[in-house]
Image (cartoon, rainbow, N blue to C red):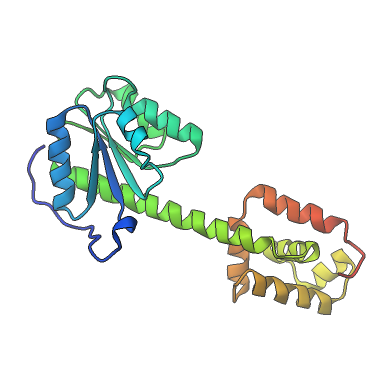
Length: 236
């Protein structure tokens, strides 16, 4: 590793150990693993080193918050193989590739598949740390969004079929009188349903309500439409 002045821009000392992002380093070169381990520690982050993809998979740590630093070419499965495996299984763990044998097609393949960066050894310490910080921020944002979607999905289950349909119409920007006309109910009833939806979805403004709807998977939005369609013309 090329030495450089290191900015300690990530600190986990104030968080419980189990919540600290884990920087998973996979390289078959013991000297590289040791160097990266020391670098990550020096920046206030938590490293975990593995000599192969198999060793990483056996450790069962891929669901933890954090990111991966992967050598591309290793005995057995390669870093690109793992990237493909994770993508296939729906795990979008951020990956930084670090290799001494990179080429342009390989770089393009990795970046198109969502890699945070593709760095060639030797790399400046700060360049690698900047990539790690970006990867951890990406993972944090993804996990926050996943949790947000999960909570909204759980709250959606508490709505009645009519409330789901009113929810959708409000999210489309429809006025109370338009919703009332389309559904064959009174404006007073629409207002009551909208109030119930906001309470159950735990939002305090129409803007928040619209964002909650937009966070829902398409199949749940469509279920809301189908569930409400059979209720048109009947008070609920």
